[in-house]
Amino acid sequence: MKNVQVLTSVKVNSAIWDEFRISCVKYKFSLQKLADRAMHLYLTDPEFRKKLHSHTNIDIEATD
Image (cartoon, rainbow, N blue to C red; front, side, top):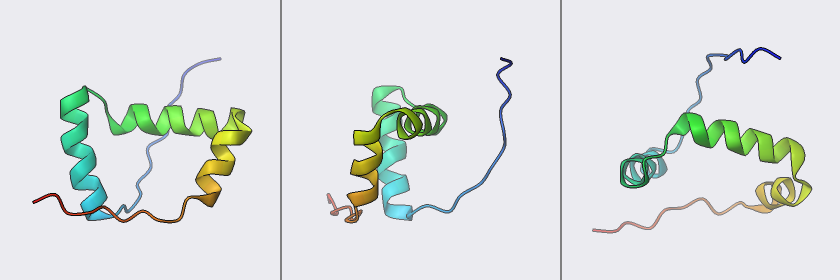
């Protein structure tokens, strides 16, 4: 199977995005890796899917 990528765009919470970008630099990770791995787990791991469906609190506390 050929690895074909699809370009997409999404709007995300700006506070979460800011924290994520900082964390990505710190841990040498990327949104691409997160998206690919999260979609794979969503499709293959029922517990992961269940956890995502039940997770509703996405507030980030300010860390000034």
